[in-house]
Image 1 (tube, rainbow, N blue to C red):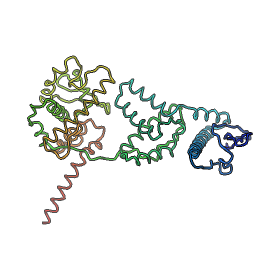
Image 2 (cartoon, helix red, strand yellow):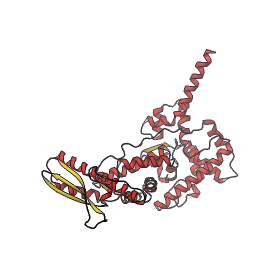
Image 3 (cartoon, rainbow, N blue to C red):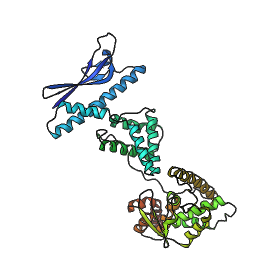
Image 4 (cartoon, helix red, strand yellow):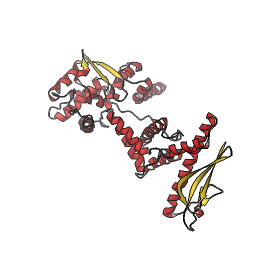
Length: 402
């Protein structure tokens, strides 16, 4: 059994700060770990093993010292428990492991390295998501880096509260937490920090949000609307219909769809979101849209004139810009159609699922067609439809009473 006490080594000069150190005793042997924390005798409570709080600028410094001490005690406790579980050990092992972990790479340095690796692998979307999470956490930290060992449960709970105060939605906060947790877990696996599960008390789930879909009549109306006066609106309409025709192909997959992906009357592509391989029979309506833009894609490998650059980062920027412009044109189309809620890039995907369900297509078939890994995901797309079906049934029951 190892005991750990926190001591203050007073300065020989009156009025000058002393140095905190950790005194470790194991099997009647003693060892000290000197820290960089400096305190005045009046700022340290030896019996309580706590920093005495103060006001003003010095108060913030003392609060940070107390948090670092708490971090160090947690690290030492974890090291000792692990070594005791393995059998006999020496204090030298404790001190060495503590030194390795508390002097390890900082969190922002580590996440920056992960972003760099993702970009090298051409995972531009994931790299962008990591960058968004990093930016949020950096604002919370006031752009101040932090050691891996200082990522504690208390800190992450404080970050969650900060997100709430800044009115960040629960799903967005969870999105940031899942990314930061992934980075932390990878660092723990690589031995850069001890695994203390600091994210276990924060929300990392996904709340169901109401999915928007339009019924078949709107799709038909959109298809028949005369847009000969506007090439941009006609182009947006074609992309929306192509997505609908191809069982709700996501815009990112349409953007990266290559000419070589069409063989023997089949469109083969891999969903960039899930990595799942899908194959769709090419119908005449799809072919007409593809042919309409063939002259604009001469010299490129892509089906649509969305991406023109061979550079991966530039290509990803073109995709992002095109998605933003596409959604703006869909809003204009929504006004023309007199819709209460505007169309968006994902509406075609939800609409295909809804239309298919209205035609009594089994959920298992809809799920396979959309490339979902489970029917539970498909049910999210159909949640609003299912509710309306229940409401209609309830109306029938009530009408029967009258």
